Image (cartoon, rainbow, N blue to C red; front, side, top):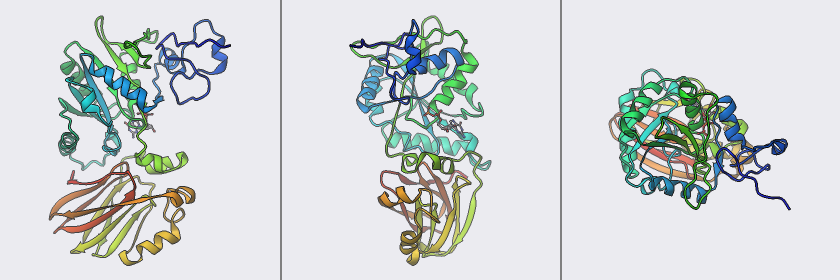
Length: 366
Ligand code: GDP
């Protein structure tokens, strides 16, 4: 019978079946004298973090343990998917610890976006969800933008305490940790086991100084994220990879816009006005009459109106949001996709999104 092996780096039970789950090690690595999991191996040898996922129960255990520490919690969110980046129950779990909110992927914003407005909106959205971050910092883990400010904010708010970095998958948490490791890490870094009483937690410890450390926690999968509504190979169409180029549509009432096959915006009532779409440059947008929209979708979903492709489109369940957009400049936000800016004399708009994906209204960022 086989004995259980534990990672010499982080203490997690080693497994060889699932690459994306904690404790994964390629089978051939089991022959080594000291076995460490692939995640620890990559940090140790390449200064490179990767994301593994945990089941909800384990994740809740980790969050609970964070509440028992005295630390600064750094939550990473994707600025294009604020709702999808949300960790359910976080405010309850972190206890009295301060939270620093990090908005990642700012390299994708068009130049004319007002960053202060984005920060204000994040603050307000966090408050609506029951969270009062001590600070909100915008970064690009890809380009390194804002990292210095983030480090300064972390040092200011941690006041000598440990840091826990948390985030759902896809927000760019490992990219961010990688960036931090490259700036501050030593290649022969010791990864130490950090175990909370009674649990084997896959939390990687990166020493900050003699007394304190930064802990990278595993990502949790938020199944309601838009990214999970499309096939992996379609992801590169949905997630912007370059700064977004806005597309302008001059619409009359009773017209609709399809954004691929992932969202439909109906302009139900209001005066002629521009709808400016801020989504991945790879997504096709189709304009149609509202009265034809249902039929067009049934006929062309998965093809003209894609992503998602035929298979996923067939299983898609839709949800509707209704907005009475006031006169002025407002954004209709579809979490994980982007937003549509309206600046007219007001409009009644219905937004169709895959079930579970959030749509909301905010004052324009422009
Ligand atoms: P994790 O699951 O939270 O650890 O996220 P990853 O670091 O694996 O990143 C998820 C996806 O977002 C990958 O496709 C990254 O290339 C992309 N990504 C991460 N950070 C950034 C960023 O700052 N800008 C852009 N444009 N993409 C990013």
